[in-house]
Image 1 (cartoon, rainbow, N blue to C red):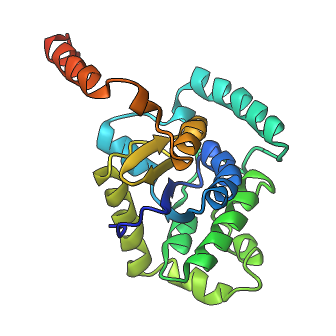
Image 2 (image 1 turned 90 degrees about the vertical axis):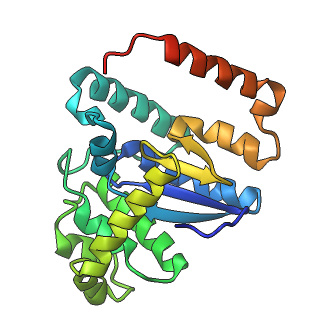
Length: 224
């Protein structure tokens, strides 16, 4: 579990998500602006889907068609490239485990940035170890790639995923600051307001609303 740090943004992500790629292009600069640090935490999105009994966006045709157009708009507004990956959905475990290994945080930031670019800009096969290794030439890529197959790296991805779920995350990317969860690229504007010291919830009676919602939910008709 992440140690308490009220100037840290925990960024729970899976490379399989184009919204995570987009958020990654915005979050570090936003954090620096408000004197926060970013802790990238690789998680298995499929673990979330299993936990909550959901399908992934790529498994719902109209949803992924909409998301692709929507994310291209976002990328265009940001002025960054966004290209289709080599395949999708893909098995992200190799690159997640590579990133999750025990290492200095500045190195994890570098690796996260390079792998996002490899997948969502260059169209590199996420399971092509040689191609991924070329993005790590100035690092100890042999040890990193070998380490991704070890039990410690596998266990760390599982632990990261469990940590995220325990903290209230249900999708990627999720940003957690002081135990508040912000979900998805589209929630970055709300996150920035909070980082700036203004939580929009302070303007409303959220306690009353949540109490009313609990009552409505108890009285509601649920399919399961």
